[in-house]
Image (cartoon, rainbow, N blue to C red; front, top):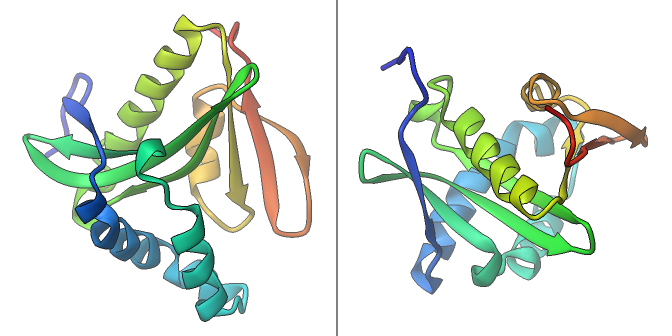
Length: 152
């Protein structure tokens, strides 16, 4: 269902019962990265449980259906997008782009930069670059990217 205009999405606050949905989407999306980088699945599970915070998570809806989630943290002069996942059936339809544009718009309203960290092998880096993010630094696993508040 590709559209010519923006994909109509909504974001709703996460509830405690959304944890399992978000966990499933996380491991569906990250499974290949965990395998490719030979990461400890148990450690990843523990880390996910520790980092998932209902107050920071919003569920992405498309046509009234939960299709993904995003976790953000506002700190100092920036909005950090810690996680963003879209159900595989709904990927490549512009939903992730619209979520990021919405977050950028929210951040811009408060003159905040937006920051993301992306695993080197994750193709999502191209999305972030298209939206004006630049690599500020990198390590052996990740690119650390930022979009300044004044980027047009």
